[in-house]
Image: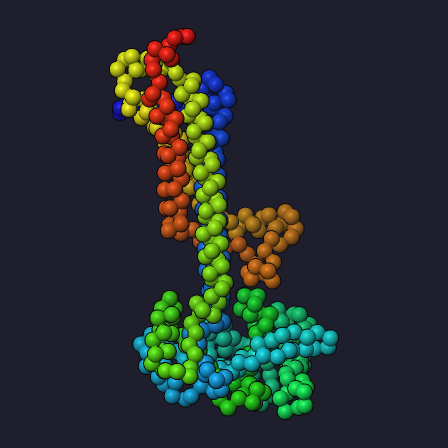
Length: 411
């Protein structure tokens, strides 16, 4: 081992517990700051990844990979379904009728999005309906005006299966658009695990929805693909094949603002927390400057023994780089340990404080997900190591410029 590495490592160990207590404290604080900054970056980005994937999967359990609508708001022509089924990426197609209104019971009134479905076909494109096909949706009888409510919507209306509710809609046949009251019966409830859908969505049988909204046919088609990540490509291809008059929307555009906001938040948090790592890394500058001042006599002796300025610079680069490496690796271990157990940690905190840290009506989900990705962790580690190395250059260069005669004048 070259003596530059040996001396650099000796100074690292001396900085941690040597003669100068203040120098030891500054050195330890620098390493600890890097470790905490790296750990914070890993944990925050892992939680954002987990949150994004969790919400995306819950969204896709309710919504289709691709949806088609008639541009004029009317029914989708029958030939469209046959056209989309010929696409090799399309796994299943289901017609639906969508409508909106206000659902009420007693003094409670809530907005609702009613979706009329063919249960057998819808089960092929929707994970939620597939799970309800033999339970909540099995008891629906055509012509009985039955409705299946999201669990949060039923809770807000204080209604249970078997009880009546009233759908309030504008009636275009009445003067001034007077509302029309349609009595319905709650057949069952469902839980998608996504607050937005659990609090606003309701299912009906397709014939009942067609009669309720006066539709001449299905107002749209839902498609399930073999590869959901190719939804944008498939949507564009189908739009060209079908031609004008049909609007095609894939799942990435259905909630485009949400996905874009998560991505922007992730980028901004990476930048902010990277600055924290940078501050901790550049604390190494003060540590090395103090070490150089403390080791002036040692540097002078090495120079008189024939050490070159490059060798002196290398000693202190090794000291700073090793400190940065130790801090980065400690942060990596700590960050991964927290990221893989953040759910249990949050549950423990909730039990201690007696309150929910993630109300589902605000954060869409009620637990803390986490998904550490190598694509995030590797750049974090590389950036931390690079900042630690850059922080060593100036103090090391100053040490290499020290003149032996001047350093030994007062020794």
